[in-house]
Image (cartoon, rainbow, N blue to C red):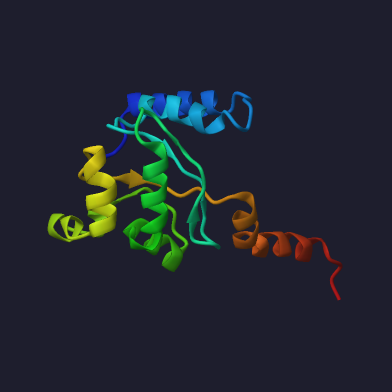
Length: 157
């Protein structure tokens, strides 16, 4: 893995500053999509809220005009087939991953739903994403920190 250059770091800092500009909650997905190409090049940029408790994809936003409804239906139908979703459900690790981190080209091309019904119609051979937990999930994962803070404040016996 190569290290980030000074330009990469400047671009990331600029991205973060721009990301913190207040915007309407409904516009946030489109705002993120408009900023992302400044730090990551891609053929298609998307923002898809996912409910991992219900194993469902919520209405998302995509950077170019496509059959949005069909993409969402296919993604929903084959949600558990996606290796990044399976990895996150097993490990809780939302780091940036590509499908090719889990599957080779033959495995991907054997995937009826993920490849033949989702990626191939979009002209894609791979997908990279990261998972940002919602505040509810984040609270559960950091509950031990809150407890430790309270314990620190508690009087000693």
